[in-house]
Length: 388
View: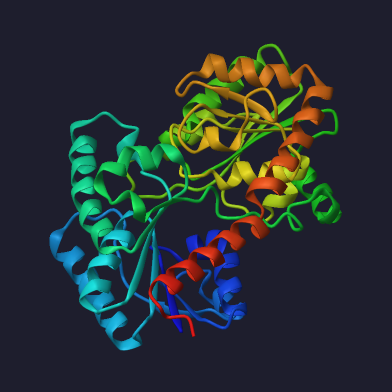
């Protein structure tokens, strides 16, 4: 049996879906990643995943480009004769469903991993795109046999577009709790990171990891950092991520240049996230909206207290007052106040950090999520009478 995972980047599939693909391979299925060519293609192949490339322009709204993408996917699907297609993110969900139906793929699964910046921005363009996305999602959901949501808010926002019997809420993508553990860090990297970033041993490290979009709360994080620095001189604020050029939500190089100083450090894209989290004391994500924030879950696995927003996706990961604090979106003052509670109380940091780890192990580990994925496939195949 052949299964295709469709996304708009190989990075997305490697970072967020690899455990799913490997589990299906262990069950004897042939699994393919269908994605544009990128830096993670060879890594996917080394894990036993077949890779087929296609072209997609993430930020394009040119009808000709979109039709070309759908036709290219149709040709791939027709040639490969897949039994199951699971897609992720807006365009792959919609285009994959259309092309998959035309190519007679028996089982199509849409996976809504978040609703994007059009649900956080109140501009005329965003409202138009939001309306268009709903029209197209309604078509996609009609074709799909199952629609997976990563949080209840996204489901509630879109539930009028689909048959409720098709919907499944599956929180998170799974975190490797063995890899993301204090016990398994590369201690040599810890010293190297501190030396590289000039982090002295008496400093408290407050970290944010995200694509550099305004809707991730970058501006609020920097504003909170400046507020806190006036009262606490022992703080270092790290921002890890990269600018997605061409995305209308992307922050500017000028903002980074202006915001960077001796205590606020933009350090770009990193491969050593586990070790960065090890040196972190408080993890922060002031996002306006998420599907399920992977970086928050990884920080929780590393026993970090969390400060995030009472927003879709984010509130699913944090129990306010237990493993962190939830604050209103777009509120730098509330963000600074929540961080300060943790700055001033080391015991609270440790207590919340332990609660974070416990919550991830119980609710968001690879083992928990992969079990749900395998159960989903088994149920769908049974319903389709494809099990031998």
